[in-house]
Length: 130
Image (spheres, rainbow, N blue to C red):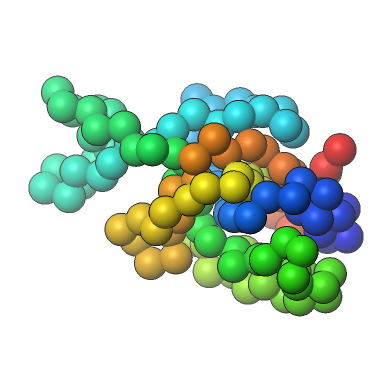
């Protein structure tokens, strides 16, 4: 967990989120994430899979509420652990960050513009970060 906190701190990003990757997403640390698509609530699917895809202005993630530059490492770790527990999605979890974001429709969701991969989490909430 220390490696993740160090990676988050050194990123300098204002917005930090947990993203669970789709099957067709394969990123390396430092890669930009593709933008997400809005959800079609009527058909319970991504609009990407419909005749009228609606791309969002960034990548969806669960907000960790980490404040780089303000939170000390212990606070960051507590917030990250809480976010990991609450971000119950399917897919490989990664930590992403960016300097601009807006809130999404789901509880705790943020949409990070120009999001980059900061670190990977495994099932034991340990990470590999550069």
